[in-house]
Length: 469
Image (cartoon, rainbow, N blue to C red; front, side, top):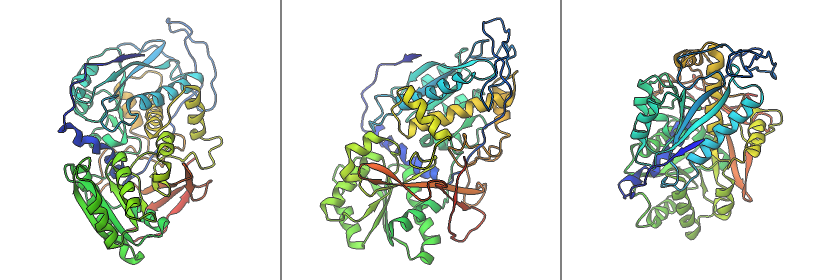
């Protein structure tokens, strides 16, 4: 696997506003749904480059039939090659982004290759490209012209060049913080579908208040980011619609915070204390939440619950900040590892993450799901395939779940972001975890960890505990 790096320019304060990119995950979460495993048959794999087949049979699920394919970028008789493009050490949040995401993709490839690969070929990452934060467009254009790349996995801070990749017809799988860039592109895929674009409501936000026993909500966002301000607006609209009947209200809103809190966050926390806030919804980045938690503790608001925007499965983050994070909540769009996962895709992920020495966080999980989407698309296209046939075949799937890791996505609908009540998925599903003693604790039924709301019902209603395994 080649790692391509360019010289990193000095990162000035102007670029650091995008530390907010993780808040897009929270917004994306508000319109969740998901998927099916894809098709396949008894596998036959070539044992050399001539195209002769051996007739090997793989475990349940199969790995497709080998047939010679010519003229398809990244496809040989032996392998189907992909690239990963992401932001490495220059990521201003300091989170494991490119490396963890690429590790998740590779772990899935290792697993898939162990059961016969796809259509008789192994899956491989031929190139891992670090965009150094500011070279995303340049690197995207280079990958478009690479004849050895079938498709691209992307985990970047900026999305410059994503539209160029999509318009060139190259299949692309991306992370949730970049989800808005996928709106309307049939060959760009996000783990749980393209999220709500405007006028959003979030059942999961109300459920978090119910779990916390909270009645007075504060919402925090950054003024420099449209994403963050829209996130704040979505939470306010949510509680305006469903809060009154449940005795829950937003009593403090601030969508004009300065990135990095150069003047601290003391006055804002004081205002929340005076308003009686007992739950803080956050549309800010993961590290900024730590600053908020420190100030809450300093002002004696230890009993105020804070909802994290990111960080599931990142044990380093939890352990390093265990005292501050104690009692914090997080909505999870993937099957939580704290549920009963024996025999599930989540258990398979953890097994191969361990074998492949993956630093597990939510980006590694998204890398696994994205890789499963890629494999599923090729299998669904059949033994003679190309980029477009794989995209078309996957886009006919109406209930993709990545083997039960996510709630079902209807890919005939989910490329177009919902706006208000238009184009909503049939249901919104989340699992919920709480930080307890330096670890995540599942809230709910371990056998049915997802809570699902019917999006066709406008009134607030209790969710249905659900499993997709």
